[in-house]
Length: 94
Image 1 (cartoon, one colour):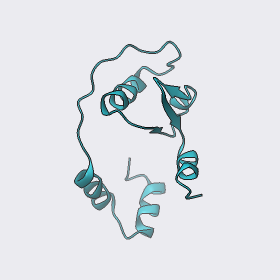
Image 2 (cartoon, one colour):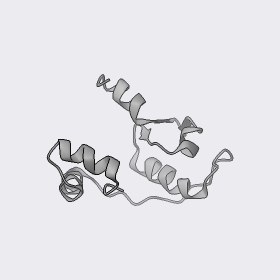
Image 3 (cartoon, rainbow, N blue to C red):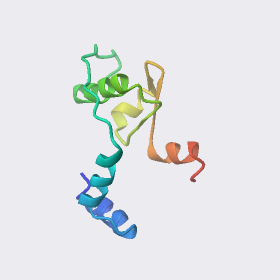
Image 4 (cartoon, one colour):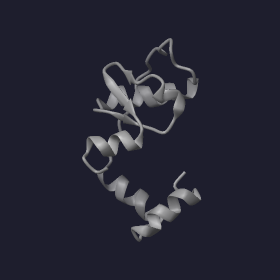
């Protein structure tokens, strides 16, 4: 996904490549195995269940996504689901 032109252009502004950006994330990331969870009735796309399961297993504070199907849920088990613009606003960066 980082190789998409819209991302490579933004990374280049920060003198990063997809590879160097991924390496930076891997240096601080923590792998958490996702436990199976039941699909919420409002889930429109079955593939999104993996995102929700990972979020629950990792005890995240928020899910940030551009996925319209996930965004329609608004939250899952108390975890807000927001887009990047809302995340930047929450962080005081917009």
